[in-house]
Image (tube, rainbow, N blue to C red; front, side, top):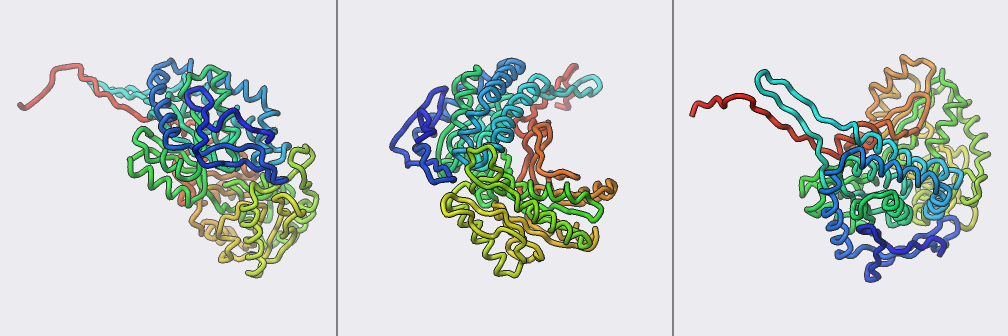
Length: 483
């Protein structure tokens, strides 16, 4: 086991183990090797983490915001200094290529800690003149927040949730996915080394029952989840029993629209990034690629040629461009969708099979002549499977792009910027790109609409989801009363 942590959990500034919890194995999906063995959090472990968070939060909230920010910025520096080792750990846990994790995982987590570290001291309320009297508002932390992570970007997601929570005076108990349990523990240790007081960021391992326990505990004021729509519905319902604040960043079946005047090389590149990066395991991926009929043949020709050059292989080799899917279960699911697409009559342009006899590798796959009612055009596959649909005009493609229960993201490629703004103004999606795709800098709010979620992560919008407003009316004269 190459990545065994010192304990399964990190609570109150220390490693904690409880071997009575069910075993969780972290498996390297490129070869099936068990790289770490941990234990699921028992009720006692969960209680210990929540007690620690509740105990530490009040003192943390009372600190000067600039002091909180200073600690987060130190943690960002430590993440960057250890980026290589953290990237190797993430590659072992997820199977994502090192070429990718070196730039997209711990590095983006450091960006979040740095951004919110600087944001902390700028948070102020309002003064409201009312004639003789006045009112003012205060921004207050929520208290203890529960973070529930996904397996595709483990350390990034942990930072996206921890950074605003901690910057604004909250404490957090974080549950990573049981499939990728390791990097959140590394983050917790780094935060402590940077000076974060014990108890403010705790990590507990577990499956759905642990997440449910956090979502329903009376000590938790807010739940932030990144995950699938079915999981989101369960967690949202559980949090509702306690009238808790929630942020839900869920799945998608996002449209990427390519008009005939687009730069096709750029559009093809974006479509590939939006379907094959992270082996297609990104919630905002543009998996429904709508291409205007007049340029469809040229688009597919360029796409097929470039897809054939993608390098699959050992994700620890920096020349590898695409690694395995995260698990054998996920690979089986994706291959099932590919078979379903072929059965429905979609035309296979490239890929379509497992790559190699070992590891969870699937070839980059493209379907053309896809119709809106096909399963592969309606359901989130979460693998390297692109569906290409053609369209005739702007009005048609907007209607079809919006004909989905999801609304996480959307993209438009065109040289006509008036049309680009006109189209994104009508797309039902929380995050849109024009002549780009899947770039999510921390300065920019990110989140979805419809079944893709509620709330926003990152940017100034995060302030609304990790603080509450207290309003104070200040009377400066005699009380006028009829009694």
